[in-house]
Image (cartoon, rainbow, N blue to C red; front, side):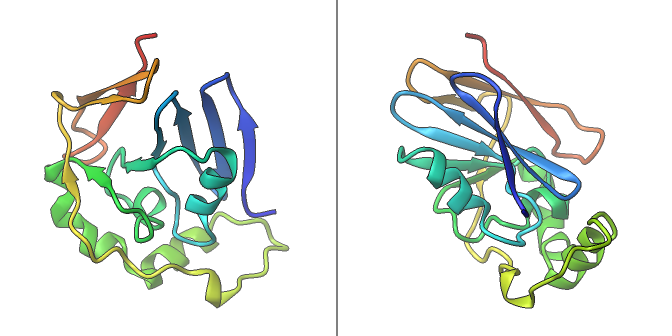
Length: 157
């Protein structure tokens, strides 16, 4: 199975795939997916199978294992300091090469499962960005290091 889902708490789900995890945070009025993986398979569809609330994607940074599946999402947030790296990091050939280094030996790739790179603009996110999901709040903090635009998120509740 490409995706594994684990319920961490009433509001948090971990969606695991080869080498990377995404986190779905579900509030009372909307949900946020933190990162979307390689863009192999349908991480958005997995998130939508868990909740029918409006879904926003926020990206912790601009590396291929975190941004590859961004194309199908309407609203996608990424720190502006990582916008310049998105074009090179979202190319299918790079994502494919890197992901295939981390999959089990018996993994069989289906070329039709690769999503094209996102063409729409990203929404800016910084230390002032707060996501009110309804009884769950997600606070954003810029922590440059891994990339210039790396972000971490805290749920104060």
